[in-house]
Amino acid sequence: MTAENIYLIGLMGAGKTTIGRQLAKALKVPFYDSDKAIEESTGVDIPTIFEFEGEEGFRVREQKMIEKLTQLKGIVLATGGGAVLREENRKALKDNGYVVYLQCSVDRIMERTRWDTQRPLLKTDNPRTRLHELFEQRQPLYLSCADFKIDTGVLKSKTVVSHILEEYKAVNHEDT
Image 1 (cartoon, one colour):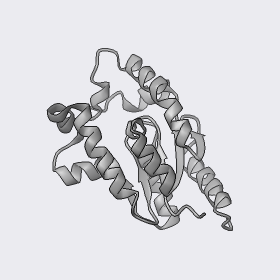
Image 2 (cartoon, one colour):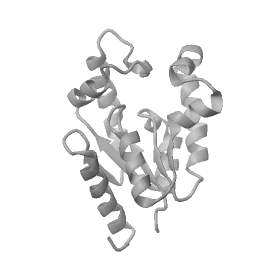
Image 3 (cartoon, one colour):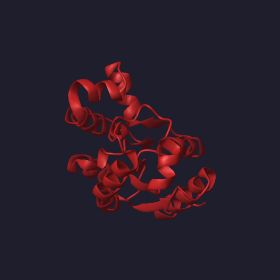
Image 4 (tube, one colour):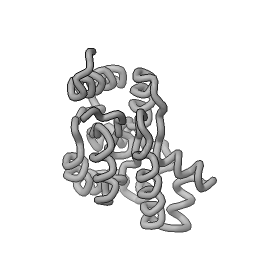
């Protein structure tokens, strides 16, 4: 079976949006970011949704958006870091595309997110501890639905994109 879509999973700050945009450009297909799609459909940002509906309210919206986006064909999708928490999301991703886990160390994510005020789960006294907790909780879920895993903390984004494209094309038996 040929996977028409590429879905990117991984912790916040792992590079899903950056890599996703570059992949979509290389493949000449549309790029979607599930968090941005939720913001566009609701008219408010993710931190506001968390503030008024809590994480559970956000996860309900996220599941509906992932269900909708995984029905599209020929796209690259960057998911939110916690999208894998729901079995329905993992199934939708696995059943409808090629899932790439962008793995990144907590130290590298701390560097990338330290000035970012749009990460509700890091609004805590100790963001590093929180990131470690998220990593421990989510790592098995990322690995359970990934077709391919790559470390985005050590490689340049162009290198990551070319490795993903090589693997994707090999799996789909396309000429590189």
